[in-house]
Image (cartoon, one colour):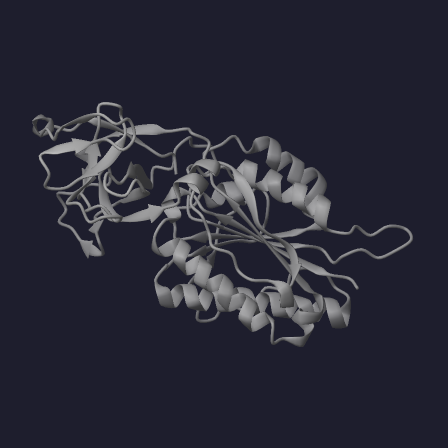
Length: 350
């Protein structure tokens, strides 16, 4: 049987924490449920999910639909697109059967790349490898979740670069139905017409737009977001605090006195510290706290102050107790006021 391999290469960097990654996870469940009742897809489609942040990992190897169960998505530090693309190509080499002179192999793989940010690694070698050896044998559909992704860079590896302008629940629901429809259409094409080019469904009713195609410069850190890595003093669990650049604070437009060099609190989210470390490069940047607006409570225990800086340079939470202990280094002491001025704090690179 000739298979139609579908790869989902999903950005699980810090900026995806919270609602974006939850919507992707729900969307994957919807895709699988709908494909399982389509006879053409059930006969041909095999699905794999690869997650990338600072590093990349296989969440699900290439699996036939009736055996596939959507995994839980982790979060990591960094947006190493080159690393993710290399990991994808290695997976294709292992999992996809090539056509030979003696036998037909699998149909041309389709890759859905979801990202919301700017690459933080040197992706050029991986891009050359893709364009030289894989581009003619696989299809990538790159989708910017929101308008912060570096679509000009994505255009260097595929002509199918789309922007999902709105990222509310309804927009995500319509978008994943479009992904499902595109897979169904392609599965019919390979089954009945023996054509293995990706067949994208119409985008009517979906706020998807085609991105321009041109080269772009590389940025080390994704400056659309600031994400801080903290640890709960009470439970010892890790969490991320996410800020977004612009003049909107928790969905409310702010006065003009706030400028785009400032970052507004989006929320704080518990993460699995082990998987976060495994998917992170360990790279970091810094930002002055004077540019950050809003301080969350700890999402793990509810302590009032979720962003407190220890002398060791790490972030933790503090409640009403007079004496506190840093869960990173064990230092004990009382909370100071910092003198009322901003100070530099370590942030992730996106």
